[in-house]
Image 1 (cartoon, rainbow, N blue to C red):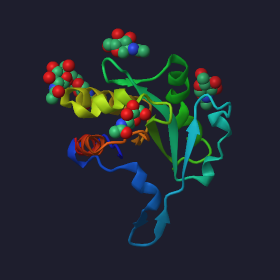
Image 2 (cartoon, helix red, strand yellow):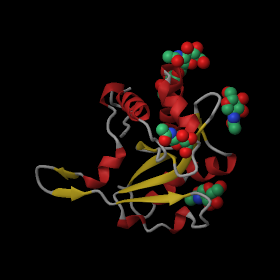
Image 3 (cartoon, rainbow, N blue to C red):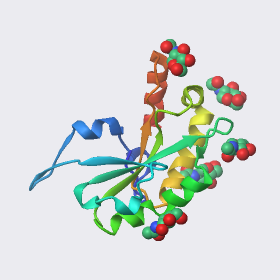
Length: 162
Ligand SMILES: *[C@@H]1O[C@H](CO)[C@@H](O)[C@H](O)[C@H]1NC(C)=O
Ligand SMILES: *[C@@H]1O[C@H](CO)[C@@H](O)[C@H](O)[C@H]1NC(C)=O
Ligand SMILES: *[C@@H]1O[C@H](CO)[C@@H](O)[C@H](O)[C@H]1NC(C)=O
Ligand SMILES: *[C@@H]1O[C@H](CO)[C@@H](O)[C@H](O)[C@H]1NC(C)=O
Ligand SMILES: *[C@@H]1O[C@H](CO)[C@@H](O)[C@H](O)[C@H]1NC(C)=O
């Protein structure tokens, strides 16, 4: 979903697995999204990213708190994520950054429970938008790769709508 502080919540839109297969048309030209993930803890400093090669960069991965269902960042990730946007914009001021949540190590039950309950979804949505805005991200990316039932899929759709 893309965030903008000037947009009403209902206009905050879109699922990011779509982004790689979409062409965006504008009046004068067409532009492809060139996206890349940066993984914290990979040993590759965000300051070494050649962000001029990208239109979108995904800062990965934040987690979900299994009790409160709020966005969860470890102290060390918080330090890295908080200046990710400023760091990558030094080489490409127009790059859009997205805060990515989940990943292969994310706990299935936490995500499945979060999407199934409206008050848990609210905690997640509220806290993730807040953190993304505080750290200057343009949007959020939900990377829940272990979703594996029709109710997971349905509930994830409800989450995106909300
Ligand atoms: C998760 O949320 C609970 C309730 O707010 C809090 O007590 C706990 O410290 C959080 N867990 C982590 C790992 O931050
Ligand atoms: C971003 O924060 C990390 C961790 O504190 C630090 O190592 C790095 O130098 C900072 N980068 C910038 C551009 O401030
Ligand atoms: C959501 O979770 C809350 C807190 O555990 C619970 O009170 C409520 O009944 C749950 N709602 C649904 C629809 O399961
Ligand atoms: C999160 O919820 C609190 C309390 O309901 C509210 O004050 C705050 O504006 C909400 N933040 C977002 C980003 O929705
Ligand atoms: C979905 O994945 C979880 C975690 O791997 C597993 O525990 C659960 O049994 C799976 N559910 C289905 C319907 O395959």
